[in-house]
Image (cartoon, rainbow, N blue to C red):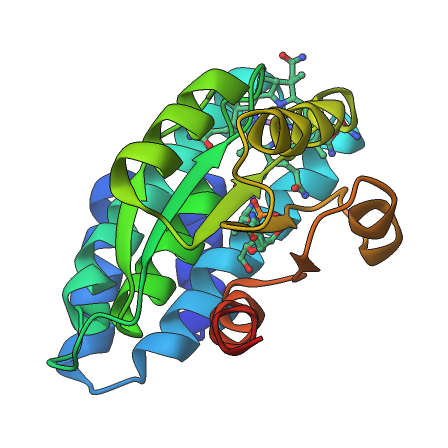
Length: 211
Ligand code: B1M
């Protein structure tokens, strides 16, 4: 079986040790980490999403697949380690309240950090007050929010409003992203920026900092 097909299959099957073995093999064979990430791990989770929607996979299957993907991401994380440049700015990131999806948010955090930002990752299910508190205590220049559920997208608006109410409106830029989030939605809720993916998030963060 071709390599990427095998890796995709192993993630879908939730075979964590097989995923580790294949990523290890890919690294030894000098396959670029971005290819391992995009064509293997992320692609596999997209397939899982479609199969889940079509009821070909159930929730526990999705959970196993997510764990297998996480194991693969952890192996390539050192290749995205922070570069030896000065810190560009402090940023805060989290998945918004009510939402426990973390894979996309973790990828954004990893890439932003690798590009010179100091990242405080608040994890998942983060209430607006927690974002506000951390932005304040860290003097963060950007507050990044991720949401994967249509039902948790309103929590982004709540968080942006809470930041404004706390007097942080002009001091911190807000960025949103996640599969159901669109540029239009970002504009509607008054976010400063939206990116559809992790590498776009890096460019956007740099742009927002320069504005
Ligand atoms: Co959930 N889930 N899930 N799930 N899950 C989705 C999101 C869903 C689309 C599946 C489906 O129906 N096809 C659906 C949402 C439907 C909707 O709202 N429209 C769904 C559902 C319904 C649910 C539950 C409600 C299921 C249930 O309980 N009945 C439940 C909700 C739990 C909760 O949050 N309260 C649930 C649970 C779970 C698991 C726990 C099993 C697991 C998460 C495990 C984990 O994260 N540790 C899970 C998973 C894995 C998925 C799918 C299959 C994959 C998500 C993922 O990790 N993708 C997902 C289907 C799908 O998205 N196609 C699905 C890979 C990841 C790399 O992509 O996160 O989109 P993504 O991130 C991308 C971009 O979006 C972007 O960059 C990333 C990389 O390029 N990005 C940003 C993300 N954040 C960003 C922030 C930015 C910028 C870019 O700036 C700040």
